[in-house]
Structure formats: structure tokens, C-alpha cells
Length: 179
Image (cartoon, rainbow, N blue to C red; front, side):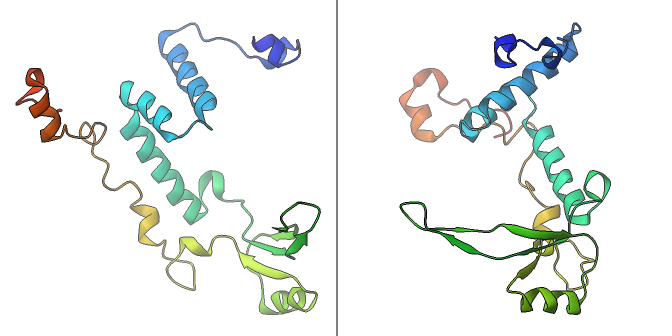
């Protein structure tokens, strides 16, 4: 199937891991790609079943902090963008398009911003929402505390409701671990 997907070019397929851990990681990654547009519930079910939900969510929270601080793999990202909104009338319902004219890294002076504004461009700070101060030194709390309510071995499964336990005598007086 992969040979057909890559139009016969087997060099793009990659090697199938032969060890247990590598093969499991390959399955987890394949399921992530397969379910990326199927809604969060299916991906979440996989992560809970494999006991990975807590670790994956905490890793994503750490990635957001690195993005907010522009460190590690995010150190070289663009900071500003200049664009002109345009109304695209070729569709049945007019759509506002935002073709980006130019990206900037680092600080952008007020003269640069004014120059682009004079040409009809709007300059936006792409990372402003990550900071709580104008000097961009304090990452706002929601970034660092993303998924703060996630507790290992507790929040993967929600508690059974009393009605469910009362209606099912076989599970009466039982509850998911951690509740």
C-alpha cells in the first residue's frame, strides 16, 4: 500500500523497525498521522490505551513554552509579518485573504512599521500573544500552565457516574483508579 502511495518509489517508505520499542513508536506515529483529521477523541483513545496521554500532553506543553520563549527548535522563527488583507471575489461568498508580503526576524523599529503602514501594509507581532509585558520577557501563565489539570493515572479516564453504577449491578461500588 505504501508503494502505491509513493508511486512506486520505495526509497520514500523508510525502514520498518525490527525491535519491539521501535515498532511500537512507528505504530504510534502512524496512528497519529492517520487520525490527525478524524477528531481528537480517536487520538485520545489511542493515547489512553497505550498509557501515553499524560506524557504526550506534558511534552506538548513544554513545546509551547519553548515556542513562547523562542528557544531550541523555535529560536529562528519569524517575529513579525507585513500583510495586506484582500477581498477575493472569485468565490460564491467573498473571502478575506491575507497574503503575507514579508516576514521579519528580531526587533522591528517604529520607522519600519510606519513605512509599511504608509504602503497599506499591516505589521503584526506573531509572538505577542505569548507575553504578558511589552518587553516580551514574561511568558503569560496560560502558556506555561497548559494542561495543568492533567494528572498521571487519574485524568486519562473520567469517573463513572453514580447513575451508571446504579444501573449496572456488576460495577456497583467500583470506580476507575484514582477516584
